Image (cartoon, rainbow, N blue to C red):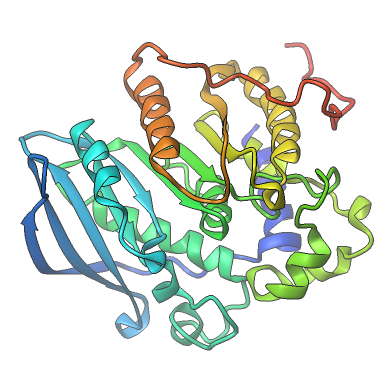
Length: 335
């Protein structure tokens, strides 16, 4: 089983994302500031992480921690570059008993062709930005696992849009991540390359605008998507037997919500084969392209179920598109 997982992972890294940067010897941290969290019992720290050759890669990290002793589960996002997480979301996370860790993935690698961050620290590195950002999630985990307040068995990662694409790859490439939760991640994330829902992003559009997100080999499949030896259900399946939640907005047509349901159903065959079908979930909401309190609440509910066995307050198995093309003709083999 592990041999097949490794073969599939090598396939998607080679053709789609590129390899991740080397693992550094250590991640160093400097606490820059600390203050109470307004409206909830907890503390927020601002931390500067440095890593890589001669400390050549750095990122700012904000940790929001509940009051109290013992260990806490943690949710990590790399979307600090889009601004601070809204206070009502931070409060909801901390009140639920989770630590929130927010870092800036664009300090790891800029969202353009600039020779910055990992590309300056590792001049021979040729992977795409999504792979570099996934590596950033892993380095944050390296640091968090040195803290006595972190429950290392209950680490979740999430991100929105291009951050969600990086989140999916981070979860597929690091088994320390217990729960992976991309939000509205679309093409190159939880969406489907082969089956498109109306006016949604496809491989041609994404590589025209953002070729630097991916492996150079990905260009070979423009106009030849049927030759690609996988679709995004493969990336999702690589997370099994750990937990996976995809959150989607029905009004976010560019992110291909129907295609996301199709890859979800295909990946679930693998989760079911491994006897962990309850660990893969999907949640649709009304609205557009954002990572809002409703999405975060769904993630907290799913994390409570997966981490602590709490009873589901709502379903994570509802498929919104009952007439959607199945997308795959195969079924999991009988045991």
